[in-house]
Length: 257
Image (tube, rainbow, N blue to C red; front, top):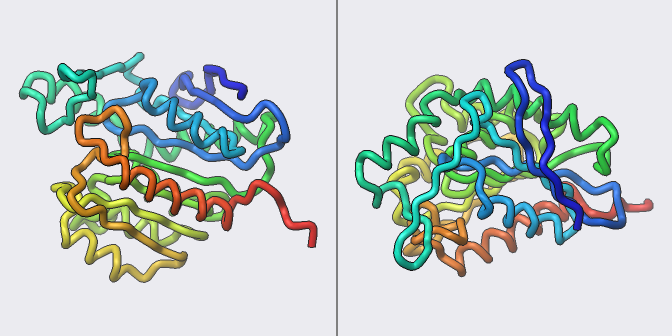
């Protein structure tokens, strides 16, 4: 495995980014990993490494770079990351503060810079890419898949937040413009994606193949291995379906026919 931290130039500055890919057999299909509200940390980098071990080139941008180097992580006596809803109000607001300054438009701009970067000499196969996002990153996945339908063909949103709103510019309406496939991993006990959200997604006139999995008993944050609400069964089921989607949309080997 090859991994490194790099700086990607953007119109707003320099974005620290983690890159990991196999040592051999390139060029590789690319996958962009979209962080949750907590920002970049080893937990996300390990997920990127998991993706890379299968044969993909994985990028993890730090979208908080405009605010400096934001690193928030609070752990319980079992060394598990404490979920946002279980934090006291002071620490909760500390975690939420960077989110208030990050717009979806910024993430779209930064994604364009990532796509341009991987097209300039990286061991990345030209063509479609995959995206995976957690929590707010799930919403960002909805935005970018609608903005770059010619490039993003395999999208995964895991316990996404604010993916369906009453606004005329709801993220799920942006995602309608996407192409390829979209998979949503949803938690039964998630206040950010309750039954009205699931119903709205099911009734959306998708321009792509849509599939979701509702994980019984799971809570928001279930898909993150260090979290105090981690659900191993749901986590593995998500990746079973995500990697199957990747094989269809961004296969490791191109057909010779």
